[in-house]
Amino acid sequence: MTDKQTVKFSDIAAQILNRVTPKEGEEKNFIGLEHLISGCLYINKWGDDKKLSTQAFKVNKGDIIFARRNTYLKRVAISPIDGICSADAMVIRPVAGLIEPAFLPFFMQSNVFMERAISISAGSLSSRVKWKDLAQQSFVLPTLEEQRKLLKSLNKLDEIIELKKGIQCSVLDLKRIFISKFFSKKYLEDYGAKKVSFLDSLEIVSGQVDPTSEKYKKYPHIAPDNMEKKLAILLPYNTAEQDKVKSGKFLFDEEHVLYSKIRPNLRKVVFPRIKGVCSADVYPLKGKCGLQTEYLFYLLQSEHFNKYAIGTSMRTGMPKINRQDLCAYSFYLPSKELQCLIVKRLKALDGQYLEITKALTSAYNLKNAYLNMVR
Image (cartoon, rainbow, N blue to C red):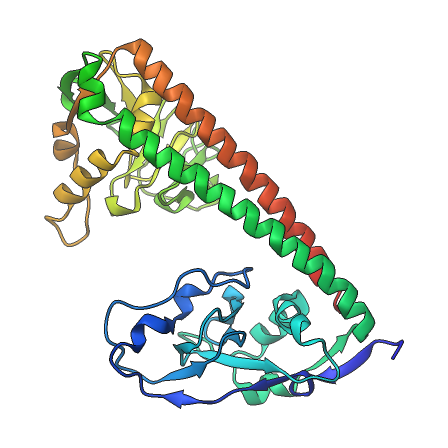
């Protein structure tokens, strides 16, 4: 066959309906929607720590698992085990003849497939796509020969992506180890660090500004949603005017660290190094009396501070650390020289993380370019 072919999805894929009631112990081999990662065909974690009470689908190693609920999240992966999966997923196997079996999961990652699946999903609260609708959809596929050529490139790109993700995780693990060491009581006491509290070493912005005024409406607006949880990375943001904010906001500048006071377990902290306004759910912070603000930025990422923040925030319905509890936090403050050395080493790891993230993004973009050759 030399020309491209138009096929129905049911010509190249079959839904495997093997519904089961999970038995005790089978939750260890359960693949839920939370185990599927957008843009990734590989499942690295599975299993539940509690007994399953709802029906599931039996899945074999190598089967394709497609999240039919909330299709806009674009989740499709290959099962690494014989087990069971969520009933909010479809278990799919390739139909040989018009498609290379190994090409099907890649095709299902393409924009042309995902956009179609999203368009035919229905439901107001949690949209779902039905197999009977998906099966009837027509797609233009490359020839088998072209599919084989694309497969070589796509498999190699996935290898590169998984390798870079592994390096990314290693950098994060190393940063956690370094933070655990550098902020430990034993390490700091060995260098003559003195115990202090935030009450005497921290400046917290108080008093709010009107974000609708001409003076502030063009300022960047940072809220907890603009902070990547646990990674201390600032996400894309808008101006106060673009976000249409009306209530009072805190004013911060290039010297302030921003810490989200709600749900401390998410560890949302960033150092934007810009001037802007932030949500009243965010504390703009600056070190004083010997506490360097860059050192403060990493101190707020430490396990010791995180445990303290979580412990003090559980007193209310919405977990939140108030100013009084924040100021009561005590820690060991080393010399300026040691603070600078610790910051230098941790900043180097942050730089490595950002570089590998850029390389990973480039690899994903190249993979998407290959996937979107399928039209």
